[in-house]
Length: 265
Image (cartoon, rainbow, N blue to C red; front, side):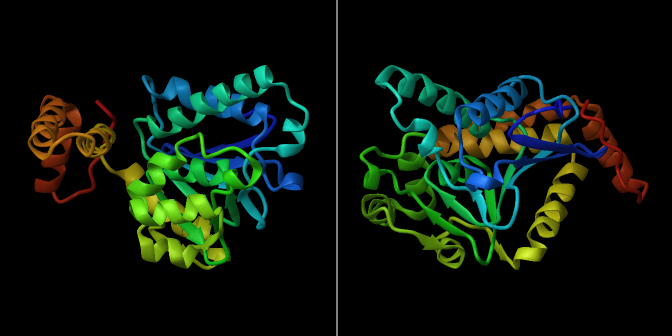
């Protein structure tokens, strides 16, 4: 499991393999500073090759004001070019590790998701958002541009033309608009958000973990190639499960009319 003594992230792991990560800097709307980047990297990089008993991860923000308001601009004030590049490389490693995580990662967006916070949500497999959530990629308004996946993941979610409008104008959009555009999977009342996310996360945790990881991999990488290559890759992912105990348990439990007990083997 994930260690639980981080400075900027609260970690809550349950016995069924669910980990809830809460970005924990509410006094600055959970803004992303260097320490948070390092801690996200520390959590996610090892999971790429060793997910262990984890079956699903939820990322949310502390409090009801913000998921993550983006990079901590007070920390960045006066930062040298070299220090800025070093910090950004930490953010890149952390964000890419979220996207490449073999187990499902769900964003529970409970308020502002601006700049790097929006990019973090986009790195997740899908997004549930509270009805009062707000999204924006505001980087061009302060002399930079999205650099943690925003220019790649947003157009893949909402289309090229709308992504250009949103990124180049730096304007915000609502959770409902995100839902209508295909960015947000579900809009929830604020006091129901975490319950709804936990419900779907627990459903994922109850499924065969190797099957879930292989299906996620097939979707993620298959969409980056032509359809026939994607189909070939899908079969390669499928083959991984044939010799597993979980595959045998799944068929046996179905025929015995009972819930399966998957162990990830």
